[in-house]
Image (cartoon, rainbow, N blue to C red):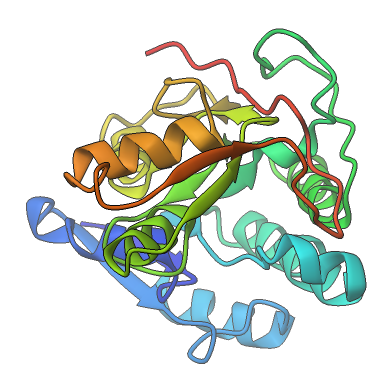
Length: 261
């Protein structure tokens, strides 16, 4: 039986993976929260790997607070880059295939068309820069890896995300002022989970960078509207478009990733 380590088990993606493991009885999943496995601690990482001999490692651990990453970039680089280097080195040592979750924010958003895996990254904020540095460590250290870039990730059940925030505000009857100046592809963690596991069970050997999204291009305003319609809440709140969306961190105007199903 193949053993799979999942880091960042308390995050929205980690929890989504936990919800489907009963469908795969031929695989042993080992879920580690940040408290159970601090991936910034290389000795801790090595101890866990040496005890279990994993075939795969799905790295869901990340520092994803885009705003705080601008103010405290050291934390973002520690988790998104240096810790990823620890994982990559240990995966190389124990012949473990790494599946690492990355982001659309490695791109600057200036391109008019969707970004392909061959486009050259050029992040415009510290979060994106830290994630790109993690990607580079993996590419330098490993031969057998999947870097899976995704965008606008959300879970309907777990974690804090745009979907749940809009739903909570709508149920309270709060007015919603949402920007339509950015476009991307909202991606459900359940769909990303299925894609990740499919790479494993099919024994995919086409290693490298992958893009995965739900393939529907929306603005944040469009996404909010879809959330309201899907939950029969469109008549309960006022939803307005706004152009000016003030954030500390710069964000790509176009972060659509090219993904061919």
